[in-house]
Image (cartoon, rainbow, N blue to C red):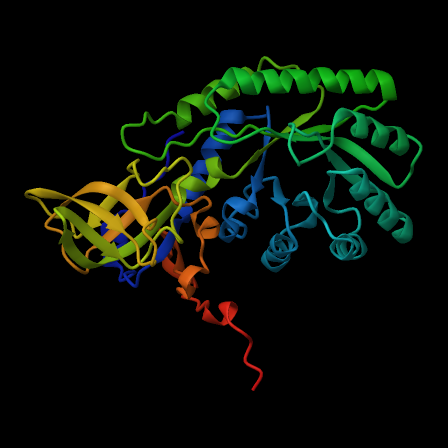
Length: 398
């Protein structure tokens, strides 16, 4: 799955995109990623983007993926503003308020696909459908032994009821059992078990599901001294799909696998010092803005570029952020050549989760700028820096 030309430090900084901290999302790389995934899976599966990975990419992905997994009212409003076709929306989430579900059903009816994660959610969905006098289509989430979804007992109770009901139709199941999975045989085993369960339900309830939304949790490599296994694992999984004679349509729900490689995080060195023999670079960003899954106490080294590039002797620095906590260490003992105040450090593969998962309100620091990049259009600011102090204080009543 060869990616398109990446954005490099010279492209970013040479274009004047240097007011840091900032995120840059390379839309060309995103387009290449989607194209390569579609080529890889062919007609064996379609793609559903889990927008929690990076909601900024919803607009650019509007025509590129078949579905969007939407897990909150805020995410749903983002889809509305982006003009996403409601037929592409899968309204998911462990908690759905009555107010929000009634709004979607009243406004958009049967166009979205709804998910059911509890008996209470099923009853609410059925009540909304009866009130609007329409038939809704839903997926039931089968739990992987956690707080998400329902067990087989509850699932089968719902199927018994929908078998007599004209207002909610079940199109299939939704299943997700973890992220950063390297073991393809585990994924294949899950799909085989689900396929067998589909056959069992068909025999018992006379249902024939048309789809399965499955989150494979495909592995994404982030760190140095870590084999780049992304393409190999995805390729093995795609080959394994060919051996599964699944009776319905397989929809692969992905977030990290789609978004990670298109993202860059820029932060500038604002201070350099040495304390007790340890060299430190202080940057204007921090752990509240960049997050790598699997990073532990800054001991693993992500891919970072220094701009401007320098040659010569390197010194090793602990790169620390601007938060007033000893935990704000991005990476330890990272080699930099001729490090100077004003240098920009570019962190790669920050397209998934970094923009949303950080402790962004801690210390009331501004939210970073966000840019889109495409070769034809150059850079475009899609979010300016946002103050957070008003969110962390009593509202001004004057």
